[in-house]
Amino acid sequence: MNTTIKTLSIAAALAASLGLAGCAGNAGSGNSMPMDHGNSGPMSSTMPSSGARSSGGTTPSADADHNQADIMFAQMMIPHHAQAVEMSGIILDKQGVPAEVTALASKIKAAQAPEIEQMTGWLQGWNVPTMMNDHTGHGMTGMVDDAGIDRLKSATGTDAARLFLEQMIGHHEGAIDMAQQEISAGKSPEAVKLGHEIVDAQQTEIMQMKQLLATL
Image (tube, rainbow, N blue to C red; front, side, top):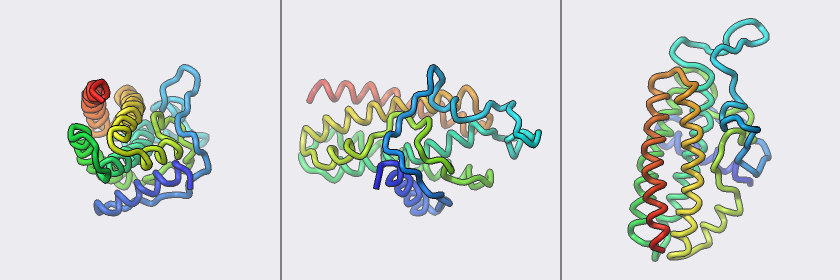
């Protein structure tokens, strides 16, 4: 099972465990998650602008309080967050990991699991799928591939802590890119607010992780 399918399954399971089970579609077969489309931002290449019109001449937004950017943000950030929760759970199950690292993993897990619930609720309220129909990973920058997850599972002690921090820094950077796209193009006040919160929180955590890495 590749990383895309596993992460989407984890996201659905997390949503279900929080009382908001999503209607997940069938996942595609892509293994490589980060997609860079020229000079565009990570989400911009996969979502129409708010003024784009469908072939039927109608705007793609179903309601006035959100647009396609908001939908794409939530649909992509749910599996992105799910992988961060998975990675945090892996490190929390290990022995010999420095306390500062396990504290950070606990913080990430505690913050991102409720955000999955929140975004799942939005998508259900907007009457759209909680998962993208196309699961090839467009725009989901920073995702860790199968081999990286396997390395994290196999690592022990300080080596595991170091690998977790290195992987999570890149993962956070990807989430920040996606959140900044939402801030620029989104319409839902709640979704844009979450975008700002993700940028602020994860930039702070990146600084913390870099400081921790220097001590290992």
